[in-house]
Amino acid sequence: MTTLPVVKSPGGGMRILLAEDNLDNQKLLRLMLEADGYRVDVADNGRRAIESLRQARYDVVLMDIQMPEMDGLEATRAIRADRSGDFNPQIPVVAVTAYAMTGDREKVLAAGIDEYLAKPIKWSDLRCLLERLRVTAIGNNV
Image (cartoon, rainbow, N blue to C red):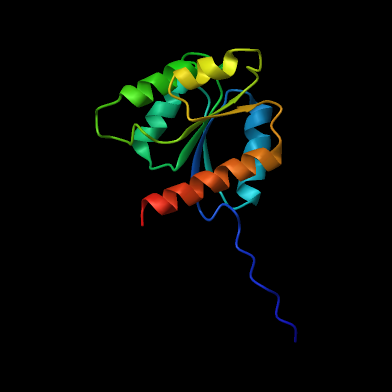
C-alpha cells in the first residue's frame, strides 16, 4: 500500500474577513480562499466589516474600496482609529480594488491600508501576499 504525502493547505486555518459588496466577487474569492484552507467570512460594506471585527478574531481583512454605506477607505480609517479594544486596529488590511489609475495606490495606502491588489485579481498574487502575511504573523508571535 502506497502512502500519499500529507500536503498542508496554504491557508493553514488563517481567518479572513472579506469586505466586498459584489456577490459574484464574494462567491469567487470565498471559493478560491476556502479551497486553499482559509476560513472566510463576508461583510458587504465597511460598516459591517467593522461590526464583524468586533465579533470575531481575524488575521487579515481583504477590503474592497468602492462599497455602499461605508467605503473601504472610510472603514480602514475607522479601523486604524479604533481605541475600543474590541479588535486589533493594526490588523493587516489589503485593498482589493478596481482603483488602478495613477495615484490610486498612494491614496489607498495613505488611508492606512497595508497592501494593494488591483482587480481583476491574479490568484497567484493574492496567494503569495496571504502567505507572506501568515509568515509575518507567525514570526511576530514567536
